[in-house]
Image 1 (cartoon, helix red, strand yellow):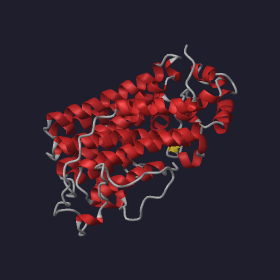
Image 2 (cartoon, helix red, strand yellow):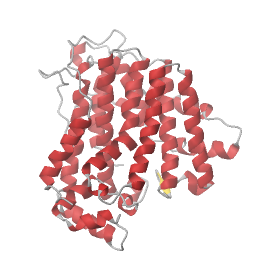
Image 3 (cartoon, one colour):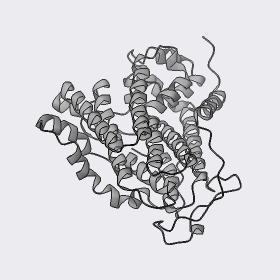
Length: 389
């Protein structure tokens, strides 16, 4: 096979892949002040404005604090997020107590509700600041149900013992019940989607499920040579992680009846934010502790997966390539690669890759009018790069 490019060339290649995969962004139209229904009482001048390239005038940096003027994304939608838990419990009700318990297992240990927050903020940002309506709020719930179903299935496939510091559902209820609980959540989400009575939105969320399945198949069935390819890694990352964020952001805009350029922009935003999110997650697998991650450190390699830090490190230490192709199956592989990654530029190049995507996500918002919701989406770009768990 051809020799791997150098780390810097690999980085440029990775960024070219990202650009090729991203949607073409429409040129930003003349930006109007935030709609009268915006949640902030200030004039539009109080929000982040666009620069001469029609991008939000903000630079996203790795591990840098967000400007103090940007609102807390989660606090902004908290009034709509607060009833989400009880609503989901009602929506996933079933007559079978064991199935119900397994389905609820994920929601009892939910984090900040990152994906529903994305849907609610996208809805508001596309509307100039007006909050999400009832159908968009239901879409946020559906998105979280699809996410929960995917994690129930992933934990069975990955034979994971813990998630968020607690036992996984399949360790408590068994593989069959955990898989059926995931299937049940997908079926219930599909029913709720149909009740939205929007064919485009149904198609988008059905595509999400298809992409997630294909991404999982890419992960478990990859050929040895594919494990070394950055294109394979980026494509898998989009399908498994970013597709749900990207297409649910787009669906939120379509439900609100906003212009196609708004939908395309938020689709691109979700795509880039999702890839940045996963690259940082892959970095944390090397630097985080089991306590902070809620799962064992170095779990990716223990599952035979090569992520961005390892792929970049393999350019400097070619001996890593053989260990990647055998999925770190021999004794000592995981420890050896972990040490080599620490000695390499793998983490720095991964940070640059994540930052590039976060900046592209911020740039994508240029077509939207300035508003508190748009600023909150910009804040999420910083928060993704500052994750510690």
